[in-house]
Image (cartoon, rainbow, N blue to C red; front, side, top):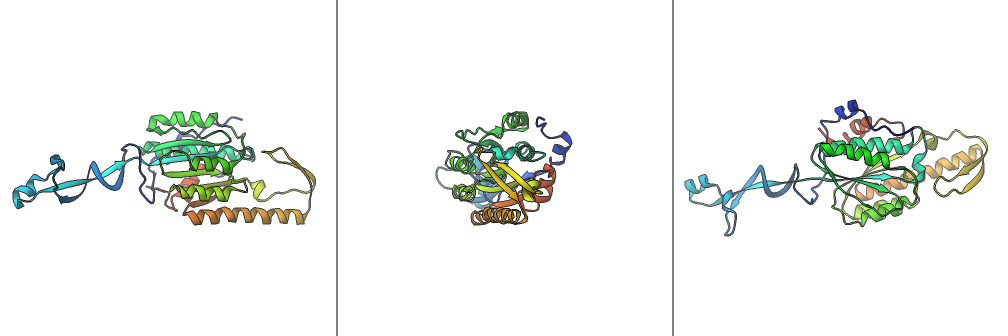
Length: 291
């Protein structure tokens, strides 16, 4: 069954939300978001003394007439926030009902919509074995293009960590990097540290299916790795399942620890969670989005 995007009702509930970065990020062009930097916009910031060569258009003539002193008005700079939607396209994302990949696409669509209607620059990025190519989308009218991009992606790759490393070293503006992934790569925590070192503000949306979190298996089974095709025969005894749970817990804790070290926001999700519920009940309380 093909992914059908998100409903108009869901998008309507998200109209009021805006991304709330913890720090300012340099952007290629001016946008609608006020930066702490002083520049030129309609938002007054402060006064400062006139210096030779300053633009006389910003001279406050009333102060000059009253005090015989030259002061300039300064303004807050308006800049767009780069928002990188990093979609895990590894084959393991095809697991679950709905698939983890469809859950990630629905979330990416909602998050992209919030960014586009706020005047931010949204960069959709597919994490797979191909080199990263990211082109920004801008404005509400670009939402249709975002949906088309999401529909065209398929979970058929591998090497999640290597893909994140490539993105981290790509020549892209630093901004808010939202990673939608199941994190099923042993090198994933190391890749997160590389991403954090590039000064991106990182949000990890860690999506796992119910069967992965609590497998209800018994008897003799053949496990097939979705990404490598390797097969493994096991007998699903209580001890085997306990060892699986121990390793999964250790891996997830390693991801959370990596997030803490780089100051990233971490959210653990199941694949059946509604995207608007994630944004309103998880990202809003953690300050990723605001009203």
